[in-house]
Length: 171
Image (cartoon, rainbow, N blue to C red):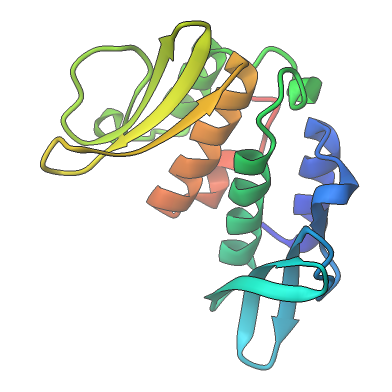
């Protein structure tokens, strides 16, 4: 994924510009995409001070990380509704079409020993990651199914190093 593709995707899903900046450093409560001699980085800053930075050898990896961070930060109902009906069924069809191994994810609340799992609980949507020993190591909460599905897709892209999963968001 290139910077211009990321910009189009964020515009499509309704990511507000006040959350990210794609043209270098801007540490005003924004996720930033930066390119320098050492490669690409995703940074976050507050009140003009850089809080954290993740470095990547390629533009593709940095763009996917920024997408995942923006999606993670936007936990409000319907904010990502611009993608249309991003339901479990649509996500399942996309992952099957792209030949993502079923061992990496589970779209129902069945027993999963390793990978990402999409679950519902008390009107919340959960994207949970289980380590290889079956221990739940991460859990992100969303109020909307669309937000949870998009986050799961971004997590799989990053985890499996499969940028092609986002190549056609309308698929």
